Image (tube, rainbow, N blue to C red; front, side, top):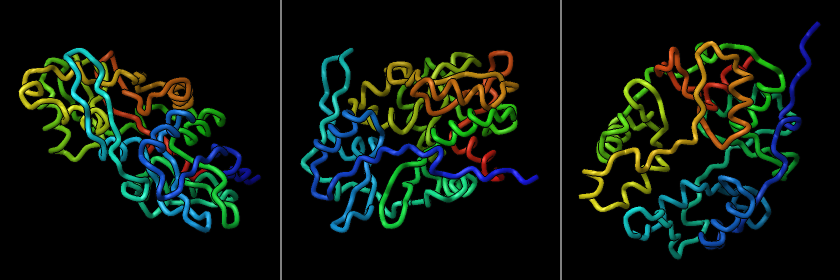
Length: 265
């Protein structure tokens, strides 16, 4: 008996937040915070998706207000519009497409999300987090160690912010893992790098990377079933799993890695 086809519409996130191209970045930021989402679609005059603006796009286009030491960095969007910073083309998938097709597209385009279409309209989003949800529901038990990405670029928690920036830039990586000895404790991603680059140069040379590290991570043993790791990710805002063995870092599991297991589903 053949397996039932798992459709995108059964696992997509149906809420789509759209803005017009002339929308100010200040308003875009308010939308992201209001709906607790990481991106909005930019809709053209005919209602078609012409671009995407993510929180990372806002950070790249923003100026940063330097506050006193110890205070939180404040991001201030400049007087630009969604049209000025949006990314295109918008990658889409049909709502009646199998999840395997969506997984293939996520991997092929190296994007975190696809906008789901029905007819001429956008009806939802299928993201790497939705892929995690599929894994959880299907209870796919592939060990984390079989899907994790290696080798892992690391920076010690005692190294400087400049050291972390150099390691990130040299490899053109999405992120490096922050370790305390051999034990992973967090990540330094492009998000943290954008804020860190706004710090005074002298401070970046002496301040430790732990001051700007993101600790929103999940750690799991390499033998952990994939569905269990996915459940942990879904319960948090973490975007990656740090795979360990005997508390030592062995690899990183991202949404891209998880989508690989769905390609043949």
